[in-house]
Length: 271
Image 1 (cartoon, rainbow, N blue to C red):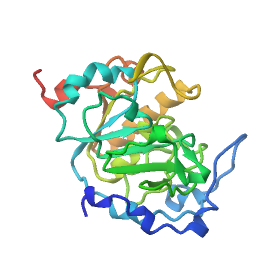
Image 2: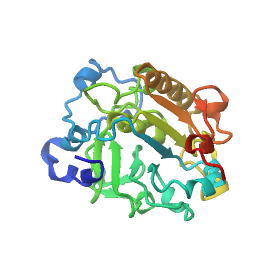
Image 3: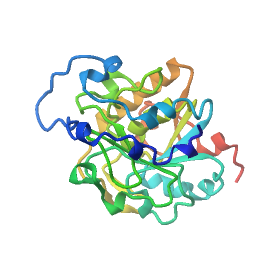
Image 4: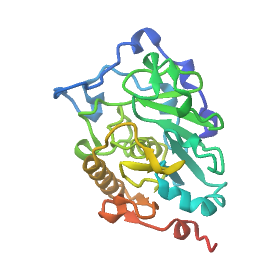
């Protein structure tokens, strides 16, 4: 089965009556969880069949995961040359009208975009032209056209428990505190050997569609994000894979969490 054949399989194997009990969001305090990734962190969650079917479908390939940080605007001309690459996007990327193509995968990894316990996706988080759309969520997602990927409670984080997707079993995804990093675990599970980030500036202000006034919906814990990226990079390297940052001027590479490789170098683009 190819990546393209995975579209919308999830809605065929949902178990609604069971799934409605899987709301494990941490609202306050510390939740004591027994178990490890090997037993789904102790959570009674069955991984959807589409996830099992997509294991290693992109073995050895590379993927570019685009955040919505303003630095990506300066890379537009180079982006236009990447139509044959595997491109993933996140969150409200559809608002950046100049984004030059439809992504292979569009994802959300936070609760804000979902309404009615996963039955509805807010319009600003849709990407109608995306080949696949994946919602990483604590509870099951039945919004039309979206695949559900289970997420671990926010007490389970990449910086502490490590990155999922590098072994032969995929547990609910730990948070990376940044949607591009959280969804990168699914890319690793699909077998991508090289993962490159674009538009991951890791700031409180600025978005691709509004570099001056655009803001994230809520204040971000930047230090947690950086620690998660650093741990994910080490875990990828440990398994012989590469995770690097192509975001010009981003804190992830400036603070040494990931290696910076200019996008033009990755693509061997001469301009």
